Length: 91
Image 1 (spheres, rainbow, N blue to C red):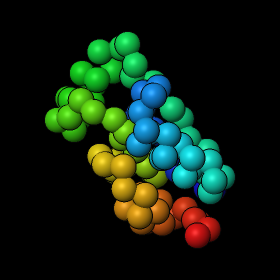
Image 2: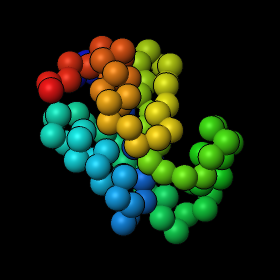
Image 3: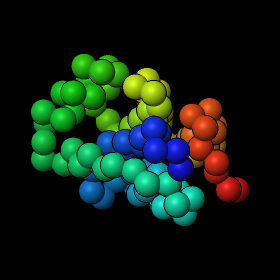
């Protein structure tokens, strides 16, 4: 993975969709930073300010200081987002 690409996953424990996204990233050997929002309403406030939502999962993919976010647990869209960021994703 190019060192300039960053993947951030906003999730909460017990969230089925969050688990699917984590499993997907791990199966593709994609390192990511996990931000756990459980019990921390301030982090949900951050999501609301950034994207107008309070739900997870949210996946942010950044490269060159520019981030794009996936606000739904759609693995096909996640794969396209990673490919657009220059990630090589093995199907």
